[in-house]
Image (cartoon, rainbow, N blue to C red; front, side):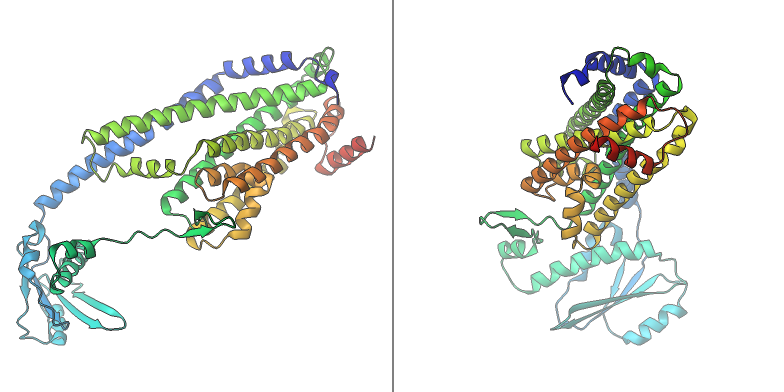
Length: 456
């Protein structure tokens, strides 16, 4: 290829781009994406706020169904159960600790006194196992499973505080021992630097990665589908023969790809700008105490993810995302050029769709494995560096820190090389396929044609 092969690129690019952004489908899609990006989080925050207020009112007004609790404590700890009655929800609950009934007899009484909402608690301590708490209630009573679950959490928290008090430590030591542990696993690199272990992911990271994968899949499919449809339409209507009078085929291919990628960039930037403004809006809601703490978690999750993002990560991820879109758009253009009639396009897109779904499903499997087991070292490296699978997930892996910036650069270099090689090989085949009229070319026919063009 030389400079003359791209004669007419500017005209093709401007025509394709202006035609694309003027389409009603593009405008509607852009509006929908921006609306979803801006309104989703505020709606979740507002709905969570309303539900939080309702739950607070219900919890304040509602009393537990539990009437009496038979306590059997074999730990020899001095537990003041009157403190538990200070909780409004359990203020009317009676704690029976006299031991007139044995534990087994108390459990048997549960089935006999079906009209009473009583429960039995037995607490034991083992030096090897630790504390063992058993809560028994009758299926015939009005005490529901939800009430038992809520009581269990409250009781365990209360009992833990009582244990610390029994240690006879100072108030300062008590507060110190009451703190929860936050564990972070770090990996040491060869240069001695430490980085967070990226093998396992949290539930919030799992959701973000999965949503990001679906968004990238949507953009790639949209860009490649538009190029394939455009090429097939021009071939079917014979417009391509008129266009080639003053334009080289390479300029057609490059102009269409760049136009589609620019549309994707505009949509992505618009959606993320709306999402960023949405986060600012939600931050103001939370800071003004207009949202409950339970509803503000939607903002907190996103904020924690942004803490790991740097400028270098953003640059590498954005370039990689664009290169991935270009790679699949080239494949889409070849698919569109392999047909002579527009009604053959759907059948021709089957292989492209199969390839795209196979790669995206492999990425989904990786994300699930990262959540459940965390042991995905080799498989994660393969999916991140392989261009076909990396196009959907590698940007998210880079931004969330699940792969280092060095590995991200290696993946980017491999992606760029793949795009360049694919474009060079596809360019010669594309030129031969543009004027082809006849039965739809199969994948093996395209490969044969590609080999022939390369040899020549």
